[in-house]
Length: 137
Image 1 (cartoon, rainbow, N blue to C red):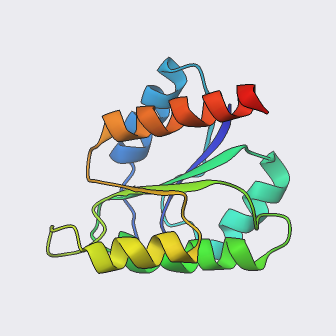
Image 2: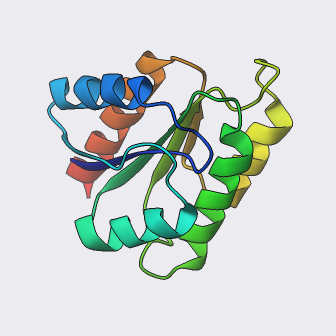
């Protein structure tokens, strides 16, 4: 699967992206890593350029909810990316606790999955389920 991996607009961390990129490649996926501090507009432009089958957003700085919401809303507003699957994970809030209301809002906005901080098993499960869906269609 072609995956576009990206940090969020305000997150300058890169170690999470390096780790996730290696993890996804070990699972057999083709990964394009956009790096940190990716604006929603840049994310949409990169989707047009690379034609991924999935977008994975990662946050470490604790602003993943706010930045992720803006990114997915922008993607859903663009016809070329409106139906492109999006997964977000990492530290979504500065308090370090998962806020179910924020998770629900991300899902309503168009995220296909909202994963907990460091939950690679959930990411692996999501990818496996997507692969099974593609085989079934």
